[in-house]
Image (cartoon, rainbow, N blue to C red; front, side):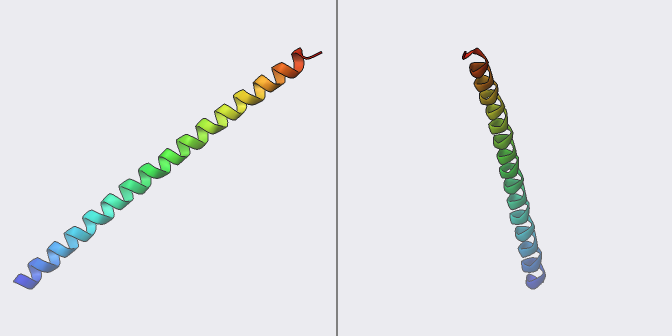
Amino acid sequence: MEVAISAVAGELVSRFISFLMNKYCSNHQRSEEKLAERLQHLLMRVGTVVEEADARYI
C-alpha cells in the first residue's frame, strides 16, 4: 500500500512540476513575442521620422 501511495505522490509531483514549467515557458515566449512586436513598431516609427527628416532637408 505504501508503495502505491508513494508512486501516486511521485506522479502527482512530476505532473505538477511539468505544468509549472509549461506555464513559465509559455509566458516567457509570449513576453519575447510582445518585445519583438514592440521593437518592430519602434523601428517603423524611427524609419518614418528619418523619411520625414529627409523630405524636409533641402
